[in-house]
Length: 129
Image (cartoon, rainbow, N blue to C red; front, side, top):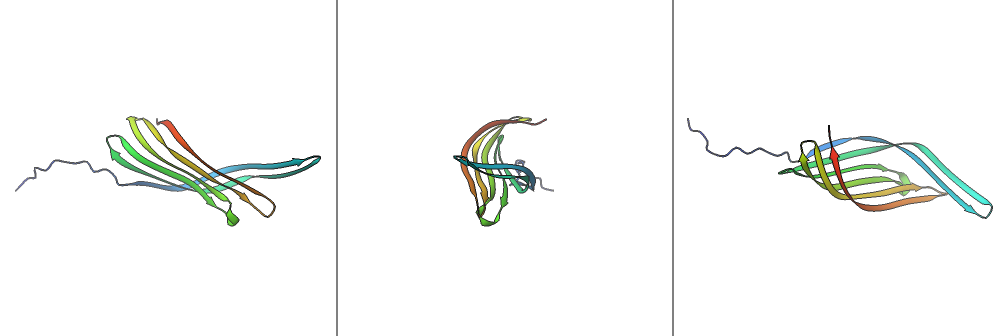
């Protein structure tokens, strides 16, 4: 029988995907004051979010990562909180990462409009044990 002399390569996974849910506790308060008149709107309660994450190993300790939590709401409200980053494994239990985060969402109703749109850079170290 003939044997192969091709080198053995370790295959990297193409993508690792995770899907789940997050339960956020919303504590929103809007207060307007003009002279002696004050108006309050308070909204406290649970918000179920869809969670999706993906990771792609690039080799030599490098990986691409992305994740988001989202909740669509009628009338233009809702929430999207997403990250995209590059990660480098320093040790088997410590990973450094850098990336971008985008947060967008709020509450839209017949008597109120409260909305945020913000993007930021992220830099961090993750330890697992």
